Length: 514
Length: 124
Picture (cartoon, rainbow over the protein chains, first blue to last red):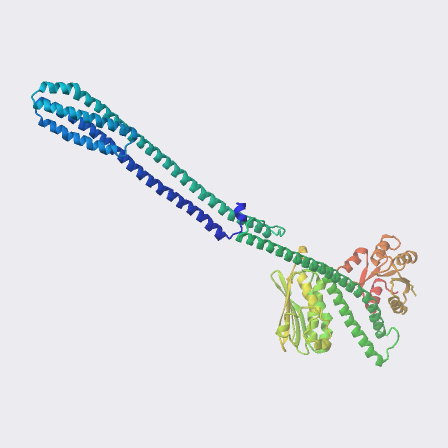
């Protein structure tokens, strides 16, 4: 098989060669059969000849018997005419003997000579007997017949019997040899057929396995590659199409291996970068958290001193200084809000923000928001309503964070509305609370609705300046709502106003804290 | 004329100065400490009537100092106002757990601080 596989020829050529070999063997066997048939027919002819010669020798025997018979009749009827019949039989005898003599073997020829000589002598005796009968000397003729002719004929008969025996023997031997030859031919034919079949089967086996083996190896190889073992190689002795295929497969495996390695390297590189990024992000968050804390201490002094000045702890504040002092206070508070938002966000992103779950009253939360922001609404001349359904039971969650969320949403609503009305409404919907903050402000363009909850997103940077937001409030609100297992969304119409909604579970399970 | 003593433990000189000036117009007498260890030592020594304790201090945190003062019979009953930096997410609870009587988030309003002090420790 390996030897066949290693032959440098195409699969097609190998198959053709195999079939050709089988075909040649069939042709050879056919020729041999034809030859055998011809030989058998010639042997049949020989057998026919031998049979004929036996027949002839029996004819001679018969003619001899007839001669003796006619002699006896001539003597009995005392008529010499009967003797002529003997002459006629003699002719048949001689003719047949002559036929036998052609193509006879030497010892047969000798025997035939003897028979002919004896027959000649017998005929002379027959003539003498005929003469004696004609002369009426029947008794002499009978004596001659008894004493000479009969022994002569017995003598001839002995020779003829020998001849018949010989011919019979020859025929029997020929028949036996023909039978043996036929048997041998049969055996030879059977052996040839068996050999032919064996060769055909062997060729089929070898050629097919020289193809099947590489296919099986390819199967195993591909399974290995599929399992990710790119080190696998396929090694076949074939130098045909299968050999070329195997070489391609090895090349493919190497390429895959190379690709896999580079992919692996790239992914490791990415992972390393990702880790670096995560570390950097964590460092950034830590830095921000620390910075925010460090910022609070001087903020405390700034706001504290300004408040004490405005409270006239240091004495009366001249009227022209009151306004700049109030400006310092307003901006200081805004800066503080920014710091708070940055701190919250960095804590959320560093994964260090945790909800503090406790029971809280939704009404209290709404009231806190209302009292905190009422003055702002009043200042802007806005109609501000904040209320909740009366029969909402105690909620479980981080009430401070929910308050913070509402402060952000209502604060925004107040900021972005120049006139009209801002409303906060809370209602219970089954197991959930639905918060709604609506305004009659500038509204949000459709394309911005999706981004509105992202970091540092405000509809327009000019608006940021005008309304002095941090841009972090909505993002923080969304994160707190989601930490409560809730959902926030917005509906808005440009120029007419917006409505922010969020739902959170009325009572959070402690296990739900994310 | 009472001279009720308030101890302020705080490492930032401007905040110290601010409270010093805030209380200057009151009858409270202010004593100061600038780190946690010093705060505990001063409190045990002077036994003030009220303590303002910043949460983040050098050497020993405000929470730890509060716990130590609560553990000592001499100071166990003194009202302590803990001033937290992280007003949010659990700092209040930590302050309460450490034994704070009240807590205020930083930045605090001097007005509100004074009100809280007065509530816990009336001037007269």
